[in-house]
Length: 230
Image (cartoon, rainbow, N blue to C red; front, side, top):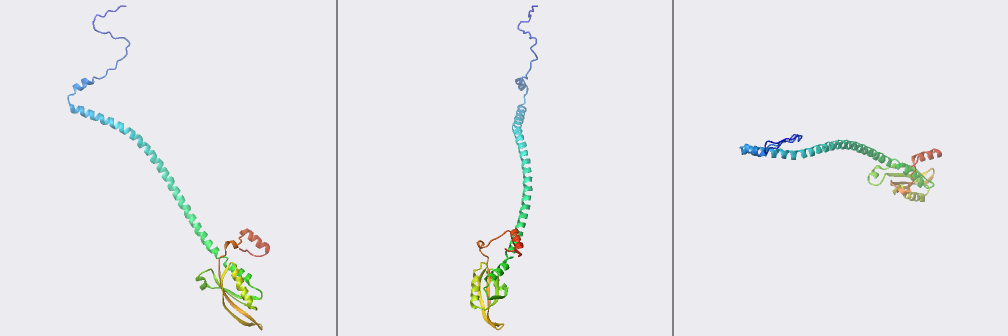
């Protein structure tokens, strides 16, 4: 069919063009608004809202990250506090055990003093010489050195007493041997020489001692019929 446009200059709408979006005429809107303060207020609020949006959203993300980090640090702090409490308890137990060991070590350090002294004096005793007494000297022990003691005995030979002093000095457990007095007495119709000696206990060099495990010492003592030795 042929159609004729009877209205010059008018354009016929094309069918099927769709719905057109109509934007507001901002120029006409600005012309209609006569208050400049209203325009300034609207512009200021627009700028404020835009600034808040630009600054708030990134800060909100940073705050969320910091809160997560705070929670993690709080959890780590709680775990660290528990570890500190456990460490303190372990150190207290260690110090208690250390003090007990020191007490035992002090007791054990003096435990074998007199057995060593008696053994050393017995080995140093020459023939035809015997002992009447071995006594500790508390006053002498306070003046210095180890445990001080006094030996009282008799001998039928004066040279044996000199040999006895020399043997005592050679012992690794005895030092400071001095002669307090000597004399002659009659015993069973025979003259014998009496002597009184003072000496001190000394801690021997570790290279001169041979230590054995306690189990081995017990087995050896049982087999030989004797007691424990150190």
